[in-house]
Image 1 (spheres, rainbow, N blue to C red):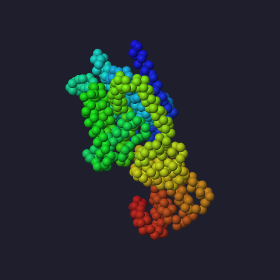
Image 2 (image 1 turned 135 degrees about the horizontal axis):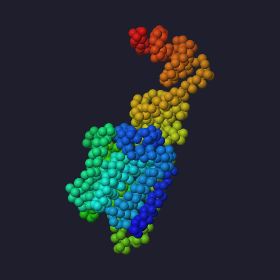
Image 3 (image 1 turned 90 degrees about the vertical axis):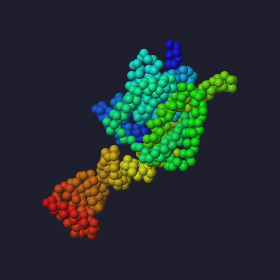
Image 4 (image 1 turned 180 degrees about the horizontal axis):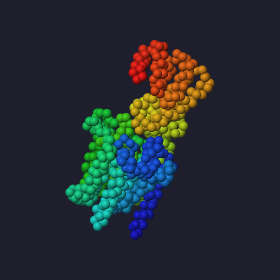
Length: 596
């Protein structure tokens, strides 16, 4: 009983440190990227009647991701708290702190050493590298998946040790299912469980396979379900060389990851790296040589590693598999995603392995009198304080999303995903001119980015540059999921232009050009009777107004008044000198006369 009380007391202290490091995220607001799409503007989470749609459709659209459990938690939060960001951040923070409790018992089971468990759990909880996943509400998928993933692992550990409690195994399997419904990276858990059984359970290959088989089978059913639902949109490399360069780019990112784990400065949102373009690049050679040296050193020290250390070592590459660029994860044109939130699960292995090696090393130094226990405690406390301060600093930066995005762009100007979000954040602050400039930069790199084009039009319209905005909107060829947004933006822009032309006509009632332009706006709004009236007034003021006469004819044709359409087409034919226009009108007249 005293042991349980001690663990509870220790856990409360660790959780308090976690709250100190990351609690500032509770002051955050919605971010101009995934947060708005998955929560603020999501139709799915607005009503419980959409649950069936959530269970059978893709997360983010595009048939690439299947995370219904995450969407359901967003629905629940919105139902109880509306769109108050505080409660969404609170739920994320609670998932992280809940994961901390699970991590404590995992390390306790692996190490059987109180000091190692406390240090490793504290480092996981307060580590600044977790700022990204906690300071963005859309990080819920990673946090929820990790909570359920590690809970399943912990239950599996106890089920393996306590054969008389088979229900633990069932709940481990159930928790794994929920993890799969939270994020795709959960598919690595069966491999983790197999390695745990093999190394820590000291079981035979056959026994390990038998014990973990239900998890592999469940993974198979999960993949079949996605196939049935049609959520299988996965982009693959078109060549082995492309895959090799992609994986090599990820490995280069891993060197940065290792640096961030031990010296977590220069953290930034949505980190990316340009893909290696050929195998002769110096950085690629340096990366492979560095990793080869690390591999050789590990093989040399392999005999000194105990079973738990070998397992923690394998934990890292296994949990990195989903983001290893074997399947490309592209954040912008020519750039691989190497985001810091990818470290959330792998960090457990890195931290656990480091602590299990370093704590005995420093104990031996203390025993030999080369360093005092008091100095070691001060060093450990200093590291904790340093990490907490870094975490607080980065979480404070994240409170202002434009500052967070600008920091990333300072190091990688070609990250169009971040630049697009930066532009949106500027627009939200009313800095439309600056936002316009950022959208132009996105389109310069990605001219096919229709969402950026639509947003550029909106930024122009907000500066009262409505004609320019309309021209931008009309350049959009395939709006995709933004079709409704484009149509609404165009409608609002046209209505503004209608009001502007109406005011100008009040000042210049004898301008045929203004009536013609107003007629164009009504036509684009499909308000044909009103556009017809404006063209007629333009022609009254200028009887030989060629464009107005032509549009008047087209208007009559649309309204089914073919006789009037023919008469106006003939008028244009008699006055125009444009041969292309004559040819077009002759074709229209032929069709119209054939339908009379």
